[in-house]
Length: 145
Image 1 (cartoon, rainbow, N blue to C red):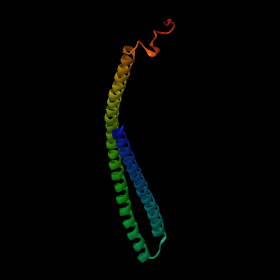
Image 2: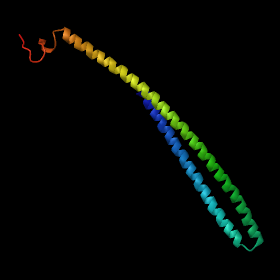
Image 3: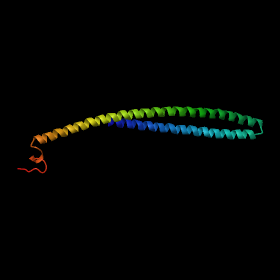
Image 4: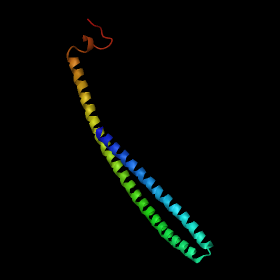
């Protein structure tokens, strides 16, 4: 039982870590989305601007945001691939670990049941040998002397 509980506790901690990773992935996606929106705003302003110096500054900011957006998208894709790989490994380890722990628990339970059955058999044999059963009489419906 203790091995099973230890494994379940470990799996619960790993699942908590996986949830944290999913939250980080979501934040990364939100950051990429806000960067894309900002890039769209800057690009729109750049198209409306009439002054060359301001248009150049907006164009430079748009290029910087475009690079940042691509980096964020790449990071999100890599993070997603890694997370899926880790979740696959976690699932395989969880299934294998639970299988081993349950087999161990089952074997221990079987051994315990056999010890209990042997103890009851010994008790019944001791009672039967000490006077033919409870009360010294025979079975039900038999007359006593």
